[in-house]
Length: 337
Length: 228
Image (tube, rainbow over all chains, first blue to last red):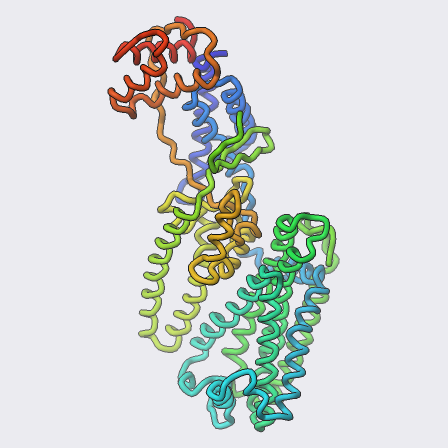
């Protein structure tokens, strides 16, 4: 068949298709979108256009026509095979099911990350409690003085530097978000350096937190430090360990890809890792809320400790139990870690 | 069809046709980054005005900084397909099968941007871009995304309705395509250039000048709609 009869034979279908595509392009951006009846015809029209494009190439029709059909198919392909981005409302479903399930599938990596965070923290804490000098091996004297000033029992608001005493809780909330969620995200990204970046972030934070805790307790500032950190600690520390685990998951794809190429393993693990870091980010958000509006508040120490203990129990129950007994999602990988 | 020598990447759809994606190299992406840096800089400046309202204003400013730092690209990529800088450069972010980028892929590629940015100004990302066949930085590799040129199609002229002339026998497909392409693109060329090109095609028949253009147009008409 020559090009001209081919064109005139199919022109009507192309016009329908073109109209449908332009409606789809503008829907959701002020356009009224295609009507449902026309939409039903879309997959059929798309297949027709695909075969017309293939014919045009095969039969050597003019480059202009081939290009035009290619363009039409490409635009339709984007609409037909678009992967739906789940709306914000699904964030709840994500936290209720996807996140804890994904974490449990990578439990071994989570425990590894937790060990990298908590073991150095514990060891450094005990050391710093016994030896007032050892903290200086991690930070210089100015930084130590700064930390001491934060938890000076004379402070009106513990945990906040002198120049921040006047800041409102909301300002501190913004500060904690910028800082802490950023640490979580960098922890994830660092995993691409064969997991070393994440391991470093975990060790570094573990050592620093441990040193500060031990040092302050030894100075008798524990009465301000422990009630302050007990409230948000459960969410923040767990979330840092989880974001570390997400980074280690990326690193694992490069170090031990198993039966896949490194690139394929990386893609697969990245999908789970981004879920972990997303969940960790939301946990850090919760931690920031608690830290800004509760931790520095006037409640008596015993209440704060109780809230802290309740927090640990809550986190443990949530991560072990949430999302159990729900049918598998198709996106889940078959093999756990 | 022989494998392309350029950066077009073909991707077969479930319908069995090859869709071409024109992947974008480091230079347009770098320029897009600079444009985005200007937009972001302006937004940062606007946010600092919030300092005027101490307390809540300061908190909002810091929250804004956080969102700008991490979610500026994600937000634009999943709603519009590209950040303003990329849009201005005619680029778009897509999955490697050509579909618009989704939330998780966009998050992966943008959170890993930290790493691509190291040690200074996308050092790692540039190396990765230059090593990879499809100009992907590390974030793109992990997310399975591509940065492509948005096709800007120029309408082509219809093949004019003039008397067909039989082309010389035995033209191969590439030559036939060249003849058709010549006529479709004709209006965008100067008269002198059209004559020059047509004379190459009619070298064997001896037509010169405007007669050569008419000759080739007649052949194109024959190829497209046959005799008559």
